[in-house]
Length: 261
Length: 269
Image (cartoon, rainbow over all chains, first blue to last red; front, side):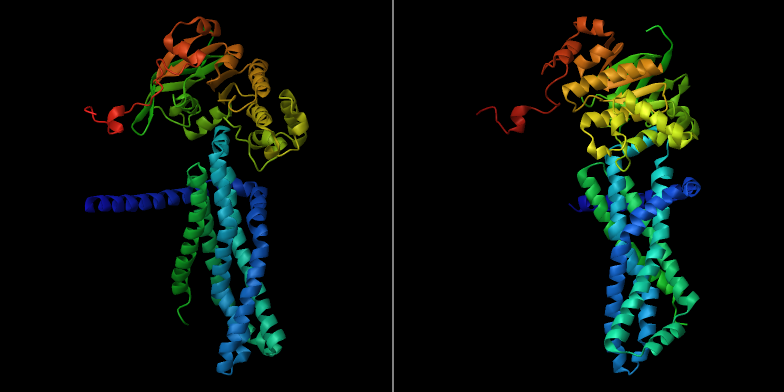
């Protein structure tokens, strides 16, 4: 019994290490075969439409609501200390540093990442990928790399839009509904948010999340067993693994970026 | 089988993990001919096509296409060789996110610098050859199984390959579509001056269109010959296969232990 458990544990560890290695190799191959994607940029644009543009609605609506909640909660807390005027800065900093990159990437993973996995997985199951390889067309260059770059380009742009909508939501609730002074809302925001320290760091985060989510989504699709259960399992794994990866990477990046200057 | 060979398969062994599929297969596909490779499910027919296309490597022996050993080619040369091959997959494997037109145009756009007007003419000619010029604006999901197979056939021959491989092209087709596809295989082969390999277990339809037949069983070529020789054959295996008999050299039962023991029957009862 113990031997069996140990064996199964060992098997799982070996399997996990193997998959990490395989995924890293997959990532390297994407980079290696990215040349075609940039020479034929319309391939990337088509994928940006499928994953980025089609995610716009959920990102914009979610951003608006998150901003509105921040406005309400922030006002409640700041009022206790008599510093309601700092609401603009609180809303903007929370969004630009944390909530924008993290929530936009999480939404992208569940909206576009899962779709990428299912699409690539089904293409594999229906032999479309084998057919392409047998036509002497490298599927990594033609299918995978354009989707990767589309994800990497889309996530930071979606993050920026998420934050913009969030700030607008915070403004609607804080200034229009509750009546915080408009001048102090915007001026505090302008004074409190530093371009390099807050905005650029936030964008770096979203770029890293974009890479992580898209690589996980594409790898899971490409590696999915060519069956109905295989593809559904891979889609689930994409959402679970990329969500965990986003939150873990967020902690690491935050620890390096924001050390309380 | 006197003309020059396009594909030579010599003493090929291949297995997945410990399960050996091919155990010394020898086959020759001469130029210009249509050859059928038959055998039961799981006998290694599709594996053979993948070995020819260089998607798998034999554990011993070799596969030569046009004089070159496929598994010794580097990535670039293999892809160059594959441009001269066409493969029709069992269910067509059309790209579901592209229209019929774009599916047929796909290889032309990827591999050539032809202007779009010329690609348009070529695509319509290929679709016309399979009788489906009128479907160019449809998506694969809007086609019936037989139509999808014919579009896939047009895509397979888009760049006029010298070797065309068909993986179970008749599976799941109604009798009319089946005859249409079978006739197209013959006609396209002769029109293009290509060599075709048809992996199938549809005996009656294949005998009408092919020049030579190989039967694969137990990892080796169990029988071979022209359609007339096969029809006249008195080999038990060929007989069983031709007439779809349940038992014979190919057993009904997968190898298993003693039946009584599996049901826990004791001899004294």
